[in-house]
Length: 107
Image (spheres, rainbow, N blue to C red):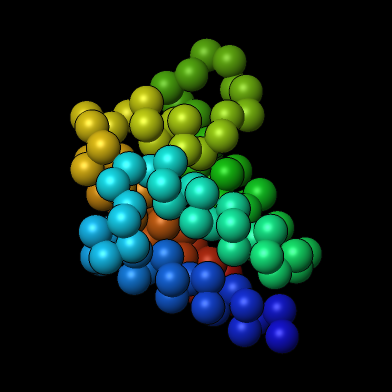
């Protein structure tokens, strides 16, 4: 059941990044709200683990740019490094794909 929920979330995220307008997503914060809603609706530990692990992944990805190794929300980091709303969705898609590749290598 847990893996099934995670698979559905990953498929949803990939679908959103491929066709954001279909989901009325125009910026990374919209994607965050969709993921947050999904996590809240399902209330699964594995989904919460995904959220925490993705946050850590994004923080690590951008960590070299910070003198303070603080913990930042992933939408804020992506927004900070994007050139605008559309680019924030594209950057999220790139980071999510990298995250999935890392997961696949470790499994």
